[in-house]
Length: 367
Image 1 (cartoon, helix red, strand yellow):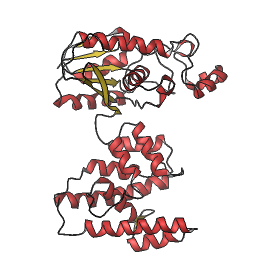
Image 2 (cartoon, rainbow, N blue to C red):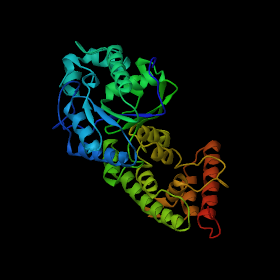
Image 3 (tube, rainbow, N blue to C red):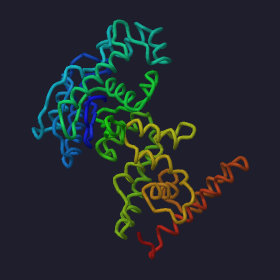
């Protein structure tokens, strides 16, 4: 940003918490609605995140949902200022409509926008104009402040800002993850800013209630959810044993990773699909556990025992909802291998599981 001398500082660009839709979700740009109870909880989690971070000010969009988030985040600890240009993109004739209504009334345009996200709703604000507006607001904020700043805005505005700071083309703006209550952290490099993290939640792992919400959201079948619970109980047991022996295992990551490891079980390459979903939900550490729950990166021997290893091993000990031995589990799964490639992959996973069993139950191994 020319003309602005920047010392080392961080800029936290935050999406407001979930709004109160009172039914089906709507297309809300300038439509002004308050936070839901869940959204207030997300704002509370943001407040905890900033307990150990020093801010000099909090700026917010004028929308109720953003102002409420900023107030709950700040709790009177830092000056709070409303910045009008941070308001969400105006959605024109789509404002306030449910997405079912939009699909019905604007079917052709809705389909075109699905293929080309740069298409603007009728009378709506073009992306380039919204990006210029938001970037100008950020430049003004930075020019008038010092230290670390928090900015509470919206999914559309935040995505456009992340595109600007990361050289992402505007036609890819919808690929930028922005779950409700997420944080984008930017740090200055010379006289400009670059992203450290995009779209992460303030806590590393969702709690049980949020895990169940995610499972239902992705329509995970009930038998699969039951299996995930059984794996979670076993993973919790293993994690507790390891932490007692001095291993730095994050038990919250283990529990969430186990509960969500098969969230995409109905899809091909379900581990990768589930990991992608969790990245989009703002939980990259849990996403890593899900990505590696079938097979760990090589080499296993000598690699640190971490949350991925715990969940991977626990999953191998649970058949449906019953605990079994590794030998039983792999004997059953071998029957499903129809070709040499499948049998080779099966053998590799069995070898990994045996190595994990030896390491996890070895009384002499320490960190």
